[in-house]
Every structure is written in structure tokens, then in C-alpha cells.
Figure 1 (spheres, rainbow, N blue to C red):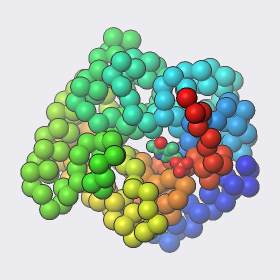
Figure 2 (cartoon, rainbow, N blue to C red):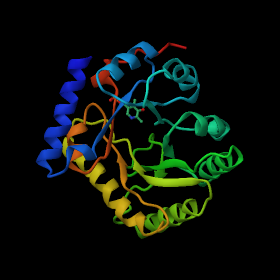
Figure 3 (tube, helix red, strand yellow):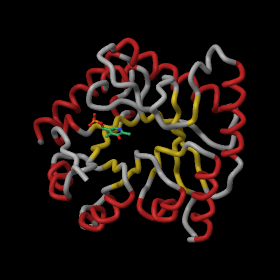
Length: 242
Ligand SMILES: *Cc1c(COP(=O)(O)O)cnc(C)c1O
């Protein structure tokens, strides 16, 4: 695993350098979903400090097994249901998958109720138009003024909520061998970030969470600051059948 992580770090460094970016501005997240705490420890020993989980329930049992690891940080990268929001604010340092006003309100309410610092969030956006993708619908925002105004209004409303801090955007690119199509999705997210920044002047949208095992390089080229890598670190996932 150490070797795999070194290779990914090299890929990130090469892509950053080619794009004229600083390698320190890109952080690797090890996506440990479906994998046990021992593999988290192995990745940690190889230098990974941030781990991404997509289910609250799975994280709830895994995180306590790793509390002895200094500086470890857990992020939620998968869809969050409102009834898990209270647990999520207690478990995760950054929630990448906020995609509705009601979820953002719930997160802010729990942060205040529990006396926590504002919850750090990213807004998950669907810029690719794939039906199956979660996220705020932002397909064709460049060409469609209605989409643009709807997204801007929603994000402005989220920006008014107390108890949350919007730090940027996240997207999942469509699964595709066409790296240029994928590049277009990442570029679109970056440009959408620039548009939305003016809708939330009291927040600073510096984070772009984009890129997974198959498309790290184009994501970094297009400005990713967080890349979420599962298979290239931990190998293929075997999902339980039930
Ligand atoms: C599983 C997952 C990843 C990691 O994907 P890999 O292809 O294994 O690198 C990244 N982001 C999200 C949202 C995921 O659910």
C-alpha cells in the first residue's frame, strides 16, 4: 500500500507542476469506505491523514477504532440524510455532500445546539447532467440563465444559515474513459465556484473536492484542492451482498 500511495503522490505532484500549481495546495483523501480500520492504519503509516467515508453508520464504528492516531481527520463524502445530520456534525471535520437548504439548516442547527464551531461544508454540485448523480442541479449552468439563477439563489440562501461555513464545492465526474469530457466537468465546477463566490461574500470558497482514482490528473490540472482516492490506494472494493 505504501508503494501505491507514493505513486499517487507522484501523480499529484506531476499534475500540479504541469499546471503551475503548488503541490501543497492539493491534499489526498484516502477513501476508506468498505475497508476496515487496519487498512486505515496502514495508509496512515504511509502518510495519509485524511480519510473519506460515505456512510455515517460505517464511520461511526470505524472512527472510534482510530482515535489513537494523532492528526487523523475524517470527511463525509457520501450522501447525507437529514436524520443522520446530528451524528455527522460530531463525527466529521468536513462534509463534502451538502446539496439542499434543509440539510444545511439541520447541520447548522445541530452545531449551535451542541455548542460546536460552525460545521465546515462543501456544496455538492451536479454539473455533468447525469441523472444518477446526487448534488445541487447545476447542469448547463453556463448556457442556461434559469439554472444559473436557481443555483445562485439556493447557495445564497444556504450562505445565510448560522452554524455552517461553506468552504467550497465538490463534484463526482461521470464514469468515463473520455478524459477530455471529465476535464470539462472539473473545469465547469471551478468556474461555477467563481460565480458562486459572489453569492456568498461572507464565506470563502477555496476548496474544490474533485478527482478520484481514475481522474486524479485532470482534476489537479483543473484546480482540485482535495482528491478523493479509494481503489488506487486500497484496491477494489467488495461490497457486501445484502
Ligand atoms: C467511492 C468514492 C470515491 C473514491 O473512488 P475510487 O474510484 O475508489 O477512487 C470518491 N468520491 C466519492 C464521493 C466516492 O463515493
